[in-house]
Length: 617
Image (cartoon, rainbow, N blue to C red; front, side, top):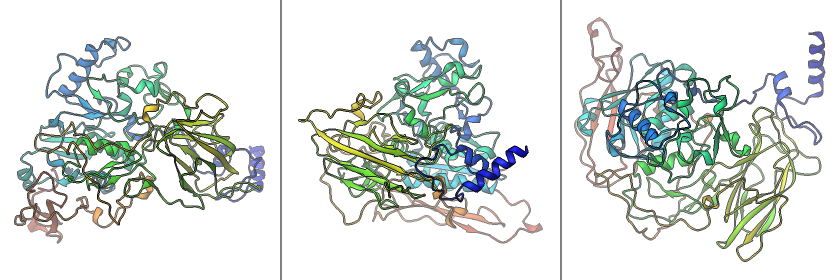
């Protein structure tokens, strides 16, 4: 023990301060020992909290109806997935499929009856649902509401009359996190939140289920991107790794390893540490199972599923895999912006920008001469080649970033979006990639990130743009794509938006031909996947109603109804009013609530109703 104490003291004497530690070029890149001794944050396998599971839930957190379960397993039997075998299916399920019919769309339900009518999800908090849980749920609701056309509104009699159905989501405390998939249609459906999963990312995941999302790793094309290591799966849990067939999921969006709906590498591991899901390319491990926020593709899928741009008369042409969002402007991949997604987000250091030359050098701030990069840096580069670009090749001239033996690239990393601007890319750290990287497309996003502690010498890379008329530059290895299919890469401007295939009968699909784009002097809001810390609960979000975001719609709305009676006699109730939309969709608020009877209850108030909160069961 004394030897360990002496060693610890000696290490402290030779270490710079804990924050912004500058380590010489020859220092070790793995900082796990130092972080352990100094009690700093350590990296580990990403283990989303909802993976802990609830007994009886499908894939650990999905509460399926008997018909949903029957449809999934019946289709598995029809497709003769003999490798799993009938003995692996949960007892008491099976039989003929049917029910509401319809396929799972992308990674979500396709049939209209599982989508929420009028893009509105009524909800209720059980009376004993703790305030910290409410704040987290409202944060997650605010994210989905801000990024899509879906609205979350407190359940009441007036909203029932307006929507013409009495379905709603009850949030209550449970042993874990679990949700139903989409709108079940049986009145009350429950979503449970537990203390260990009361965090923004996990709750956003559960709200994804409520909107109609299934898990990403269940897609039929998952074996092209991840490997299921069945020998490491806990006994009796193999059925949680079913791969849905192409008749259940239409893979119109690319597989998204960085989806908030994707599980981490140790899901149902036999010993808690062995990998059960692994990426085909280890450079994508760092993003699998992330719970910072829904990804760009997650949000796009929700907008497509609920036809959020159906009311747009003018469709701008969005480059770099952006798309037309609910406000009829381009929603851009993370880090990109501008009217048509051709601009790059400002960097936090002396770095970044749009590069249009056919060759050049990119380096971390301060690279060379024994310098180290600064902490808390985010640099974004957009290499924009001409339209006849065949590929963009990268060659590292020097590379030293902080590393970790357990979870590489958890702290400092260089991201190369080699699957396209819209998807999470390869992340390199330590001594960087062993070979060059080749991207088959004309637009490549590169992102360098450093955290708040240890820094090293950084990196320098050289890039070359090869046109279709040129021969491919020689690289140290093969094309460096690690099995990448070139169809993922963005090479030409996005074509006019096709007719949405998931539109409900009461919705109007977007026009077949895109109309002429009308430029504006203001940039549209760009999509941004923030860290959980970026979200704050302001005064508006402290109540049980999600703040609304709307624009004026002229005469497309009726007049407001009268305010409803107060829902409580004391201790704070709610009044509500509604108005109807005369057109296919209105962005302005159609439902409002305000507080009433905020005085404390006394003996004369006992027995007052709980119309706004659910009574204890």
